[in-house]
Image (tube, rainbow, N blue to C red; front, side, top):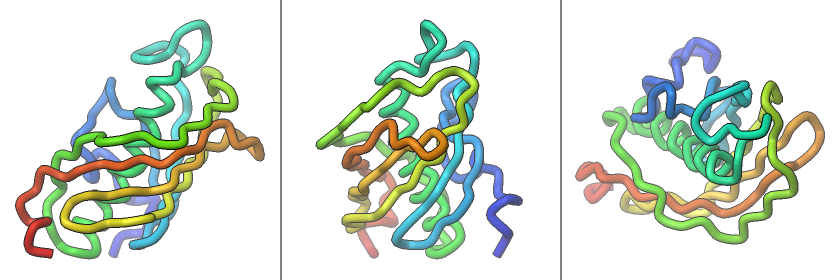
Length: 147
């Protein structure tokens, strides 16, 4: 298995620039993942020097996508599949992340069954938790039905 720093996140998720909101996978197993993302100065969902709420939610969903992709490729030996954001619950956005800030995001699995993935996601900038919530995604892969 490759060390996490050698894994290109673009190989674990279908989203690609300019619509990719995860830069690096720090850790992943079947229960937890940690990723990083540096908010760009300009781009999709960046306005007034900050990543807007839709971008924060997209970052949270993509953190889940990277985790699902890692589990598929490196644990279950399946191809990466397209996923869909199904539900966001209990979202608390304490503040918008600023351009240039590095976000450290933790994904903790609540449920992963038949292609439905639900996780508690927390986004931090430094020691400050700036967003948290529960994200549910669904995979389009047929392989999930057989798990």
